[in-house]
Image (cartoon, helix red, strand yellow):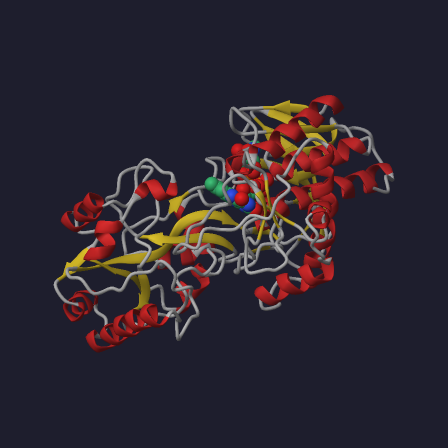
Amino acid sequence: MADDVDYDLIVIGAGGAGMAGAIWAAEAGCKVIILEAEDRIGGSTALSDGVFNAADTSLQHKLGLTDSIDDYYDYYMTLNAWRQPAALIRRFCDEATPTLEWLMSIGVAYPERIAHKPKQPVFPGSVEGGGLYSAGVEWPPRGHCPAEGGSVYIDAMENRRAVLGVELVLNTRVRQLIVEDGAVKGVEVEGQTLRSHAVLLACGGIANGPKEMIRAWFPDAYDTLPPGYHPRFGSAVGSRGDGVTMAQQAGAHIIGKNCGLAVSGPFLPNAPEGFHGYQPTSVIYVNGRGQRFAPETAPYAVMPGLIKEQGFKVWGVFDEGGRLRADPTRSGFARGWDPQFVLDCVANGDIIVADTIEALAGKCGMRPGALRVTVDQFNEDIAGGQDRWFMRSMEELFPIEQGPFYAFRHVNGGFTLTGVGPRIDPDAHALDEDGRVIPGLFAAGEAGAGVLGERYVGGGNSVANAITMGRVAGMTVGRELKGANS
Ligand SMILES: Cc1cc2nc3c(=O)[nH]c(=O)nc-3n(C[C@H](O)[C@H](O)[C@H](O)COP(=O)(O)OP(=O)(O)OC[C@H]3O[C@@H](n4cnc5c(N)ncnc54)[C@H](O)[C@@H]3O)c2cc1C
């Protein structure tokens, strides 16, 4: 191999995927540099709750749970209706476990306990205090949740990077690959040419990218909202879609339409910045007809797909009793739903109010008779202790009976993570439009497409994807350039 290169591997982005890729290539003896656009490392990985999905792990064993990678793979494929490429998902499931064990070996810790999610209407997030929990609809639980959130991964990997002496440059946004004869040979950045044998796109997702890119690749995030509204993005500011544009320069096949997660939540465009908190517990979610379509406590990983299937027309309905009982302190947030907040939302038009259920249905364009039946059945089921349609736990619920009645739009507007980018193979090579490996180009995490599907498999899907496939990319580069057999 010619030696006229500055680096074996240039890694673009110092989030979960990039840090892991750089470290594993360096462990194999490669000369690596990481270029990070922002003034700090970590990306969305550092902002995240840090839940990491994996099966057959030492933490599961310690807690007396039996699991298998075969079951994880079946679960993953089933939830995604077998739309994701089987060999890639198998590789991901196989490698997630050693990746998690490696993270623990470099300092990441998980509380040794089985934790439980609060039984609330869709509430994205991890579990307080961390531990192992059922982060999707799986059993045994596979969501490994550190008590301190995702920054623990970045801290642990940063320590390892420093020990290995991997170069890291901040405030350097890469936008141009060097492509020669169909192969990627480095990057052009800030007037400099850096040549390398390989480049790893680890620059995150598109959630904060140009509107046109989001509309083209994640129309669901827009289609759920009334016209004129832009989805709220929760991911790190660096998730600008640069991985997509750079991969296109190398002729990559871009895939992943609607893959990722736009979390569902109330559509309250006039709510103050940073607004959060539990909705009234006795809220029901109904579709455009006025009928319930799922248990309101369905996992946040699943709810966006269910809302899509209702044509994105979903309302949350509650009554005056629910308003008066609303208490933001239950969720530990300073601000949230309280009785005055609901009245403020009525005043600014975010919440619709009416004296009767039928009138509320009329204002929201539902069938008044259908909403009446829905509410009557819900109230009867609370009295009977059994949800006849969706088997939601009826504990601590109150009937919807005291006017006035309230409704808000419930939408998939919290744009959290995406899986749009170059199609990758099980070794994290980027592929061209014809399905051939593009020499020298790798992609992982949100920037590499194929692992994250339209159906998020649960909390931990994306951090696991980032660090696992970043590690896989680093191992592949080590193997191909240095003959390492990790
Ligand atoms: C609030 C929140 C909570 C979450 N909680 C969880 C969770 O508990 N479990 C889970 O599985 N997922 C969670 N996610 C999603 C998950 O954190 C991310 O999908 C995942 O960590 C992405 O990792 P990544 O390495 O692909 O990207 P990132 O970690 O975002 O790293 C990408 C890096 O690339 C840099 N970059 C971008 N463009 C360039 C460029 N052109 N040049 C140089 N650098 C560039 C960015 O600045 C960034 O540092 C959460 C997301 C958010 C926002």
